[in-house]
Length: 103
Image 1 (cartoon, rainbow, N blue to C red):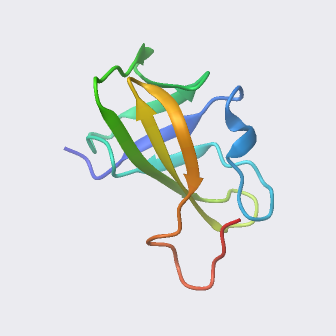
Image 2 (tube, rainbow, N blue to C red):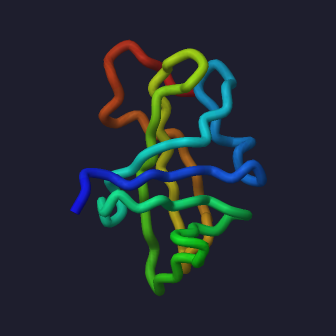
């Protein structure tokens, strides 16, 4: 068991994943999934792992986070998936370092 999973955002889905300064953030991490050092990818609005859509009959909520690769701002999003499809994305501020704002 690892400590986290990697979460990448494909170029098709990257438009809404930006830090407070507007820089794209497409390589994130999460502790909300199985923490097996797996690589998940958001591709065309679907949660993928090892080129397969992650299909579950229930709702998955995952917090994904990273420091912006351009300016270093902490950026986090709460994602909701239903049957492997992204149905909601919100900025998430819990656990962020003090003094960092998220748009």
